[in-house]
Amino acid sequence: MGPIQSLIEHKLNSTFTPTYLEVENESHMHGGSASESHFKVTIVSEKFIEMPLLQRHRFVNQVLREELDGAIHALAMHTYTPEQWGNVGKAPDSPDCRGGSKHI
Image (cartoon, rainbow, N blue to C red; front, side, top):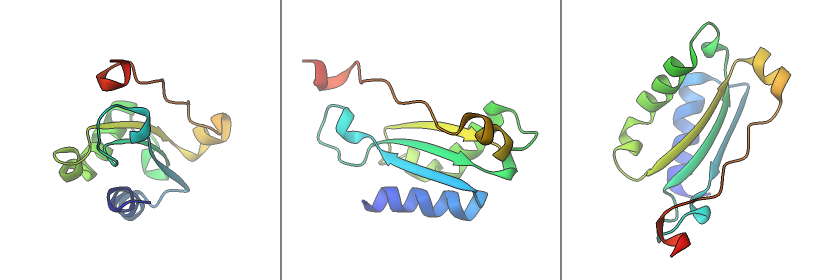
């Protein structure tokens, strides 16, 4: 696990006290040389109860603002309440990269 991934996990754990958190480095699925630039976050937290999806995403973006302004090029996020997670149990797979140097 790289330093950016560790920092993301630390910040999300500290802010949301999640019942489930998975931070996946998906940089290998994309073109370029950056090794920590594309991430997928799956987070389950009681803090999301009665919070619309857009507000959840804005909240996560706010917590990770510094990283999003710098090292992180893309962040896929899946935010759930514990009840929603109990019904779903798994975040969707990320699609294949359709741009960048992977298709040159």
